[in-house]
Length: 133
Image (cartoon, rainbow, N blue to C red):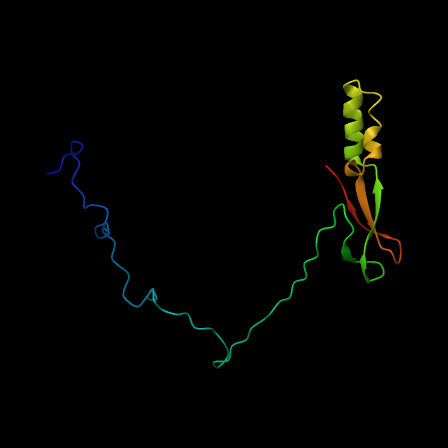
């Protein structure tokens, strides 16, 4: 008998056959063999394939980009307009809290702190607004 805990029976080593624990094995033929190749299901042996095309548009961020205008339905390169947004005001408020009153106007002069509005050059309507923060 192998050494182990008192009252413990010795069991087969791990690589051994699986134990059923009193449960009968499933009848043969109930499950497909692991080497079986699934057959396509079709009407009288004819299979159909559906192809879906998906158009992925690049994200409009802080540079002009190609987009389809939802207003005039034309594919255009957007024009940008930068506006003061939440990040601009948050940096201004943070500088004011720390006592930098002379520097708190700097975020309004920096394009990297502002939100970016993408406009259609044809109809001049807003296509997308990229918000910072």
